[in-house]
Image (cartoon, rainbow, N blue to C red):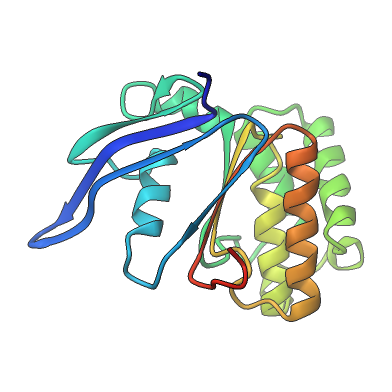
Length: 198
């Protein structure tokens, strides 16, 4: 069976605290896997391991068949990540943030600019594209962060509590985004503490 990502027996400890104790996760290409749990349950830790940001103490994880520890750089080219909090550069404009990410991902300048414009429109940020991100509302920063995770057209998209800080209408926009991505063949791992969202 082919998996877009798979984790087997993941263990992660922070000092005397065990954040993950033998976690298994797997998703086939073009599907959504929702991970429901209260704060402190280890959801973000699992996402950070799958995104190559944290090494497991035991167990194994792969993305597209590539080990997240041994082939971290290759895995990073296949994924998009939106964490719990917006991680945009507040001193750059919305457009500059997305173009910068595109350039860091080796997109030619024109392609990065075109992709930025496309995503800004998709997320309703075109009118704010030339403003510094620090002037954005919390919801606008969140949408910019979601857009940033899609610059590289990822095969796998990790959304760690993506509706944090969003009003109900913008939450609906996030779910529409998830449906669009899955329709395009992207695999989505979504974490949430909310049973209503799972």
